[in-house]
Image (cartoon, rainbow, N blue to C red; front, side, top):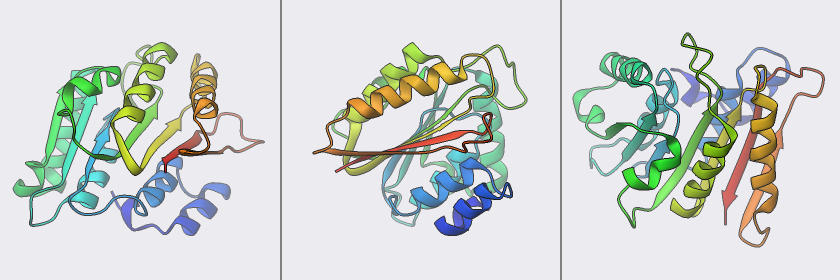
Amino acid sequence: MGFVGVAPDEALMGLITGKRKATEVAHSVWKNIVRKGHTVIDATCGNGYDTLALLKMVADDSGRGCVYGMDIQSTALESTSFLLEGSADENERKLVKLSLVCHSKMEDVVPKGTPVRLVAFNLGYLPGGDKSIITRSPTTLMALQAASRLLDSGGLISTVVYVGHPGGRDELETVQSFASSLPMESWASCKFEMINRPTCPVLVFLLKK
């Protein structure tokens, strides 16, 4: 929950030295993209830590910020709601809209024409949950395509790909292939991967110019 305050260089060095998580690096990057009042999407709520981090970035007294959170598991949304109850005030919680839906359907959740600043993905399985329920390449590709259509200019698609489980590497290949297919005139794509730690999560960032 303290990830939001970590500087990008501190988070990156922490990841390299094994003292910080990949999600902390992602959060530190988001801070340079997301501002108060922005609309953002947590495409894979999980236990709610990304949802909460995003909420703290967009919430202010204006009430204009919004976090759309989604997951296919009701237990994930319950965990997210529980975390928000204990870590955000009532006015902040009103800015979060949770949906029990696959991330590939995000365009059905976010109102048409809404300028989205960031779409965040944690790809893999729900920590502490059923490890047989994982994100899969076909729907992840559809979700990335949807995110690219929703994203406003200057916005970011952030992916943390957990590769230490069956199907994880295949999903990473899907993300990389999608990132490579984006025209460099309008997108900038980059990857951070630990070479000698093959099960360490891989970060892929897609910035829309």
